Length: 74
Image 1 (cartoon, rainbow, N blue to C red):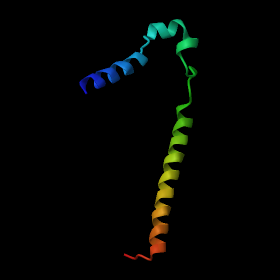
Image 2: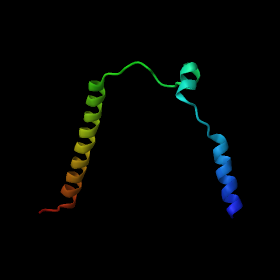
Image 3: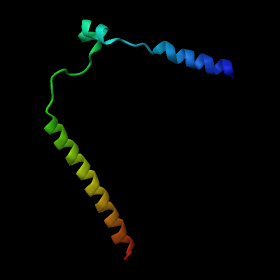
Image 4: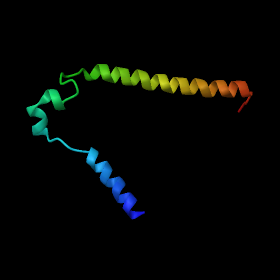
């Protein structure tokens, strides 16, 4: 059993390797896979708020619909 656990952990570590920041900056086309341009935080905030309030509104309407269909009253 212990050997199986060791082999599993060893096989997982073979697949993992790390890159330092210096190595990544020397060859950005190979290591940097995201856009380096700055983004507008207001746009991201507006998108996050609209998703949050949309989800909250949907949840409240769903609960209201379930209560309405079940005929529950306070």
